Amino acid sequence: MNAKEISIELSHSLSEWGVSKERAHDEFRQGVIMVGIQYFSMDPSVVNFQHLHYDDEFPTDINAAFEYFLRREDVVTPLFCYEDKINMEAREPYFRLFNTDTREIEYRLKPKFLGIPAQELDPFNRFQFEQMSKEEHFFSKWLVDSGKNAEIGGKLMESYLACYQHEHQQECFHCNSKKSLRWNDYSTLSWQDFVCLVCNAIYKVKTKADMKAVDLAFHFNKIGCGSSYEEFCKIRNSQPRPKMFLVVLPRKSIIRDVGKVYPVHIAEITKGMPTLYHGAFNKGLSTLRFKTVVSVDPSTKETWFDLPRRRNIVDVGAVAKKVFIEKFSKNMYIELEALYFEDSESEDESDNANSTEIRDVIKDIKTSSGNIKHP
Image (cartoon, rainbow, N blue to C red; front, top):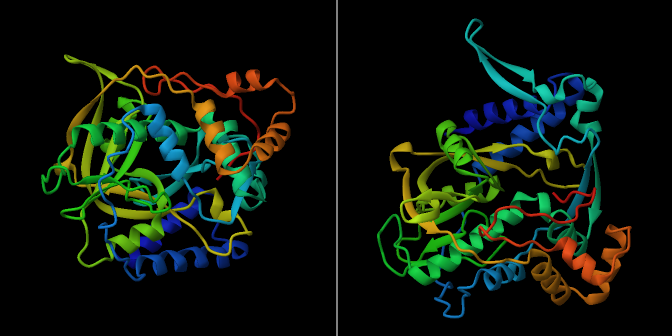
């Protein structure tokens, strides 16, 4: 991987978002590529996990673990909500295709975007951003959008995975050390969901809707992680460079001879490439941010272990409300509840609308939802 590859990949990503090579967009394209190369060449971070001591108080109950995760969740400011004017959930309108006749890459409009005028597809016109507070961000994420937010589903799965690892002490995949894996509760650190205190190997946890989605991700070997490309480069440039592993599991269980389980797959990350997302078109941000698409070494892919299905009931709304009020205040909760839910409900009705019973750890999440989107 080199600077030229980064430049080419970002050029493809720009075209997939509909940023043309016309003069009007030339400065933006050049700026994106320049920042991507700067990240690629940036100074390394110091990877030191000795501060992570074994915590005998880490919850083994999924409800308590989910609450534990939410309490430690934090975000980098400034924060913005956005509106996608064409209601396409901030997806890229184009896909790339290699033309075997011309031997060149072409960009074609995805079927769902057909018929939408080019001016409306232009990402500089398509998105509207508005700055929001931490209170608004977490309320929107935890209590408004949670029902259709895969991140909340992933948070539940990661909570259960952490519970199981704490209880059963799975060996490090790299060095086979026992009792060396720790969940890293520094939520603003990308790529370091679990770490090994012996060999410094780091584990990024990613969930998919089901096993079909897991298999497809490994088949195409371009897995979007949503994590910071800047942080990825800091770790990859470290000396000594820690081993990086991708852990992928479905949010829906499958049936094995032993019963229903969530297969936990693992493979070594070999490459990470920057990719644009809707936030790149937010003029309110002083610095461009990229997400990351990773590739793994197929020869290292294994089923690490099977996570048994647990029939716990997780009341997402109740846990989120409790943590939000303790993190901010009851008055702030009431104020935002009135803002986001125009049809006033009683407190009990609101709780019921926002609560979720997760019987398959996470099977379906059904909550009230609003129009505002957090990034």
